[in-house]
Image 1 (cartoon, helix red, strand yellow):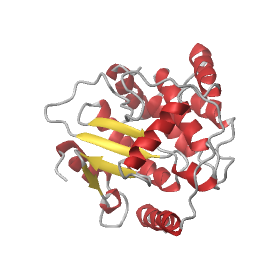
Image 2 (cartoon, rainbow, N blue to C red):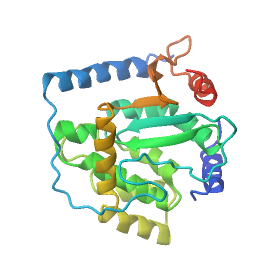
Image 3 (cartoon, one colour):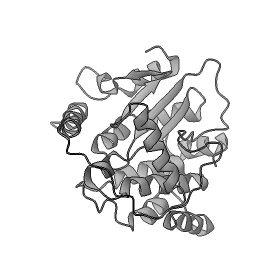
Length: 254
């Protein structure tokens, strides 16, 4: 597996700039069941949409469409399309990111897959508020500065321990941006973009479109139109097996 420096180099070249611990896949499955129970029980309510935000869209996409972090990568022949549905405040998404995020990112940066990211706001729907949507907008602000991958990792690492309407503290975004390597004018541009919630309406539109398509929970992983049970990719000890997932994603053979 490459180092963070190798990953950043790949991203820039692409043009966009067991030990007694609980099994993370089992934990993820339990949380998924709990979230489904909330949905079925009618506990989830509509998120408050009082936050003002800009109506900009990421370059190359329109409202409702997923975001491709590597639009200029030359894809290998027959590269499958991989769709990831995620929410920066979703605990299971954090588990997914920690287990498989780097693998998916490297495959995308290498042109082995075409990556589509659907930024969703499931936790906003559960708790109220719009912290998930604001976090998604901030990630796109980081992408504008060539730091999508690094910021994506740093923001998930700072996920609030409790799911409340407060969500991420405002200080989280500049902290994650600095940890992702932004400084000087890049950090200033990121901060301006984040404070004005430049991509908020776009994130809302992606949530709406993906929900209408039947994706109401996170995380979800789809390869060439077929949903994949990512939790089944584990080694003999029950730990996540990113190599096995990489083989399936790059081949498209689900």
